[in-house]
Amino acid sequence: MPQLLSPLLADAVPEAVLTILKFGFLALVYLFLWQVVRVVMLELRPASVGGRPKNSPPAVKRTKNRAARIRIIEPSAHSGETFTVDQEITIGRGGACTVVIANDEFASTIHARIFPSNEDVLVEDLGSRNGTLVNGTAIQGIVALSHGDQVQFGQTVVEVIR
Image (cartoon, rainbow, N blue to C red; front, side, top):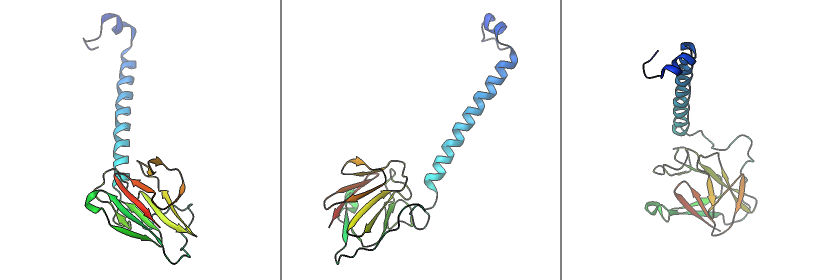
């Protein structure tokens, strides 16, 4: 029995219970470390091709002559870059994304997608850790975008131009 325990505690707690508690605590530490490694590996895994979950609706081509566009506002190093939304655009840190935001540590590998559907432009968060914001509000599911809307992925902000 370790000398650090008081004599009363040494008599009250059998050696077997202390051993079980030590191994239980050690198991919890290993479980925590395993979860940390698992989350890091999920964030660093290569991007899958397509970027769209199996159960989400497919992107539909626009019937209008002029497709909407998105323009990067932040970060200032990429400010002004424009992308046409005539088909699905995936945004994230992964190399397979249409818009790669490699230096944004708050963006996921495949963070979100923006796609046309009939006359609308829609955005969908693809299960990112930090979420997607439209005009400063976190979104759930698929959200329609209007001219001037600002969409934030991590620290990257884009503006919708119609």
